[in-house]
Image (cartoon, helix red, strand yellow):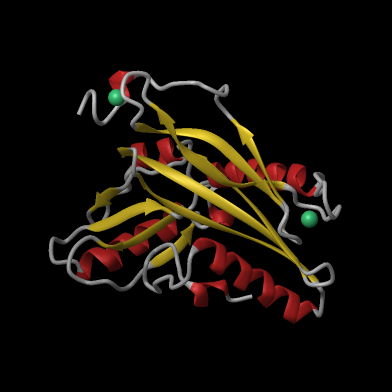
Length: 244
Ligand SMILES: [Zn+2]
Ligand SMILES: [Zn+2]
């Protein structure tokens, strides 16, 4: 399937839907092509971590679409263990240290102009010969005479992502093995987190998880699981009123 039509990592085709919408659309593309009622697809989002702006996080999502049972079940998993360095090169140069650190050629690379021009973009490079040719071509159209060399973060080209996707798949497997206590559908698990623990001094709600809500993909059944003991209070040092 041409899943690039749903948006690309390199940004040349923007993504329109949420990661969940995109993953469901991918699964349905495959289901339609194979004439199956069951489909599975993954979608990753890679970028700066909002909590740690200098770290790159990979958030993976895997969805199972089951039209026979009428359910959609997904799981997510985030990790910082993803290759993320970028470098530049002039014609005739191969950034050998960058390539060694990235794990080239198992980790494939992308080459594009460093400044000005958007095209050409060479993806999926696995040989030094292709890399050298791509650097020469992209540097020639870049306003600073350099090509940008970066890891190809598409799942099949990025071993560090594959490890994270595998962990996400294991989570989805565990979720599918859990059945709803009300209707026995598979996919019982966390659907929401309740935030707000009262400050020990003034009672103002501190933005910490208070409980997790489990839910069923097939029926409206929900159950709340406290993650702090009942009557627990938050440290006034974290309180927006006591310690603004
Ligand atoms: Zn307080
Ligand atoms: Zn249910």
